[in-house]
Each structure stands twice: as C-alpha cells, then as structure tokens.
Image 1 (cartoon, rainbow, N blue to C red):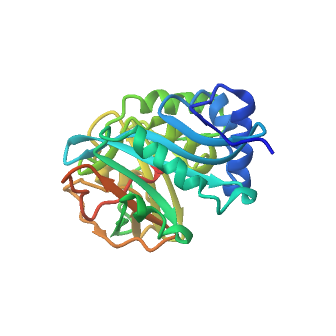
Image 2: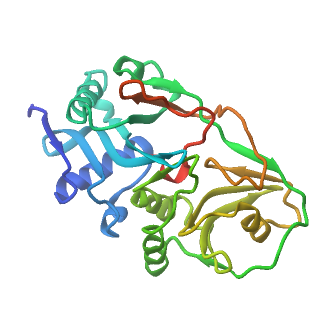
Length: 293
C-alpha cells in the first residue's frame, strides 16, 4: 500500500483539487470545484492534506482573515473542512494535520478558531481551544413599518451577478464594528454561490447588498454588504413585509438606533477559540454567518 504523503495549498493541481472536492462531497455533501473555477479559491484558503495513491484521504483547511473588534483589527485564522475518508479514520490523521497547522502558524495570529459539530467536542480542547458561546441577535418588529424601495434580486447562479457581488464586496465595510470580519470576500462568495443564491438583493436607495429571507413572520438577515456605514433601521424598513414581526440577525448588529437581544446559540455547531497570550475573545457576539468556514 502506498505511503501517506503530505500536501498543502495545491489548488492549482487539478487531480488533487478534484480529489479534495470528492472527499468534501462524501463527508459534507459540499463542492468546491465551481468556487475554484469562478476564481474565488484564492491564497487565503489553504488545505493541509494527507494523500495516498493520488487521493486526498484527510484534510484540515486554514482560512486567513481578520477580525474587527470594537473598531480594531485583529489577525485571525479559521480552521475548516476538517475531514477524513471513512476508510482512514481512527488513525490520528486529523491530529497530525492540526499539529502541522499549529506549528506553521505559531505566533502568526491573535485568534485561531473553528466551528465543530457535536461529535467532536472533546477533540479541540486537546489543542488549547476553548468553547465559546455564540450569540444570535433578534428583535421584535412592528408590522407595517415598511417603505417602498428599489429592490433588485441578484442570481447567485449567474456569473454577471456574482461578479457584481464580489467586486462590490471588495470595498465593503465590516458588517459590524463591534465584532465583524474582513478579508473574507471569497468565503462570502461560497455562500452566494451555494447557499443563499436565491435570496440576495441589491437596494439601490442604500447602495447595499442584503442577503435575507422571510420564514413565516420572521425575517432572517444573513449579511449586509455596504461600502459605507450601515443604518439598520432604514434597511429594515425596506426589506420587511407587513407580516414581519421579528428580525433575526446572523451577525452582531451595532446600530445604536435599534435595540436587539442576544441569546446563546444551541445549534449543531459549537465555536472553539484559541487565543495568543492574554488576548480575550469578546463576549456576547455573533460570528458573521457568511464568513463561517
């Protein structure tokens, strides 16, 4: 049997990239190939993989981005796409890859973090990660507080619309200065391409792209992409309907004109954070959904 070989950052190796894509589909039911072909897999997404017989059998990916916390930028590394082929599990491959990542990026971050499913909650504390509460925010909303607006729906499956979104996002401000992310446009495009391709809108009045969807009477806002300060109250009046009575924010809102309430997230994924020195992760914040790896 062929020996395991370590590879990293091989996005331009077609055979390895397509094998990586096959493993991601097998483990998570997701694909990366179209994201690559559209030009969104750039230097900030770096797979660390073990390969056997030309096939990727285990992987831990690094996402290089930065946090904005109370207006101050902090270096961040997000771990994602942690996966092992079923035939190669229980051999310590994820542990070996995590140790490679930690060694390579030692002293090159303020925060290293990841979202883990419920099956591996005891794995990441072994590497110094601490479980942190993630806080979705919501607010009650009085139906009828709506304004007519020029909403243009964008198609996340259409190349021209995707190019418009990406070019626009290159100059975006953080969705929140209280807690937001920057240098994450390629992650955003993954969501626009695969997850939210049906609910992306450009509001000409606000010169903003808003990703949102209403379910029954709840309006879910997944992201607001703007080149200037975001005024939530104005945006809400333009995207809500007469039946909207509750707003759910999938990021940390920081508009002083609206009052929101944060509640501890009890979903499938748990946030784990490893910090450098004595730096503290902010309390009661929501990591932006569209920059979650």
